[in-house]
Length: 203
Image 1 (cartoon, rainbow, N blue to C red):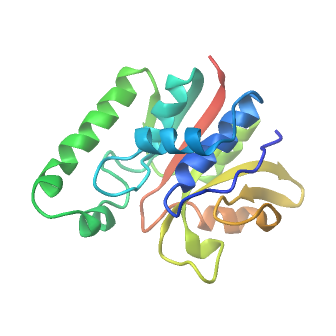
Image 2: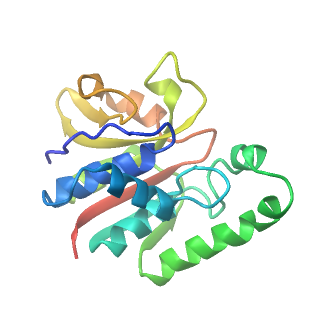
């Protein structure tokens, strides 16, 4: 599948940028625009920090008419300790669990399938074989020597005998990486939390 590249506009909009790539791959009429990037970001975050949640990405795609499903390693927010460390004290800390529970409940109520288990390379293959675009949670350190230990979203655009082409919205078009199966498998997840959002065609 041809996945048109989109470079994230903001430091924290890697998830929405990946979703833009996936939506446009499924429907060429989807605009690659800052306005849509920001709209997706608003829908996919959980409040006081700009972290993008897998359920938020899936729900944003579903609201726009696309089929989507999730594979997540936990029913808790990914990289929760990092989120809490960057939150304002007081009400936001107390409300985080309720905000997350509400987002997850809305996602499941929409009929979006959630598989709770470790994400494997086979899940990436399954998505590609089904004509879906897999968006995976990873660590920036797998793709940059300058940016490390930051949760990050990337798109796996295609698979060939050379490996898996990964579209990293943090870098320019020319910086797309081709990873072999072992390296891509090692890149799945951030500090033990794993998530894959598979975006399919319009329902």
